[in-house]
Image (cartoon, rainbow, N blue to C red; front, side, top):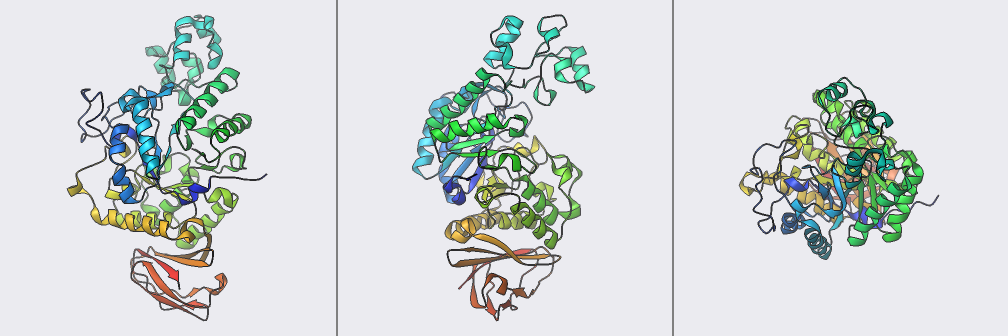
Length: 504
């Protein structure tokens, strides 16, 4: 099967925005609404009032950082601050500014070369979703009864049921009784607020496909698909891809799948996944046995997270690259953290050097790197909701050194085609040091990272990449080196640091 993925993603630098927490505009038509104070700690039910007008006003900030693509957590109408409880798939949440705000954001972003990828929540809806509400009101008499998975006994009122469980039903849920038996319908993770859609129903499928195409036609540049593997139906995702790619052949379809995903990455369903497997490898390498216990409970991390030496990390990266075709690897969505994980800085015990080295790798590696909002200024935060703090717009409190470091890495990635589109080959690794080469159209860039505390002077064999004599010019860092008879022996790698060198 031929695999075609969007070419533009190879050049993308993504930035993930949690809309309620990024920027609040004073020009929002509803700015008289009372929100929480921006700087108070986040909580599961509070709203800070971030909106799409605010994002539009901050596009200059993102451009200065070097961002050319944004991934948004859900923006369609929802009664939750994270907006994964969708009640209207065809309109933007009014608290975010509605359709008009999204129209303005898309126009401004596209004018400045920034792509926009919203989050699609198609596995489940919410208690406020019209079709679900209709069944709650009318029971088995509703024409929407097949849109969900209802328990017939409860649906026909032989037993008490409802979207807001009583004390007895809640106790059953707490004991581990599934939502189908406890409250009368299948819900995602047995959460009553998230009734699971019946994607075997023709009308539901068409509804979802139409919603997906609607926003592509509106101007969105693709979809990030929430819990995509839980719609366990290849034909569904094949048709989803067909509809979206017919509307825009360059649309990017990236799925939230935390584990190996051969089944979905054959060229007929998704373009990529959120590459949490690389996240886990970086955590294991840079944080090692200092990983907090909670880091093993995130997603599928327990199965893949473990301390790694530089050689073991290199082995793991090569294994991951071997899972999929190059066309997939070059558009994989690579990230350190997200709204679903504690921030990398916090996982690393506030070790800024670990965060810096992780982004050095991510921004020189194969695939599309993503910066979670605020990482670049040193924002921290543990598991949800702590990882969803409001962005701190007080520039005096920013970690300016870290932000400059990130800007430099982004600039170099955008400058060097080899870092975006080149081959990847490890040419050296040991306990603490890894060196790899990226090669593209005659250019070679070397990346060297030393996670140890002391300086290192590794002898690096470049004959294996066909280079026997050359000078090494620094792109990142000040160290220079030379290749003589296929070896580098004069390179100094300072402790907890990295270099990017171009073969001259």
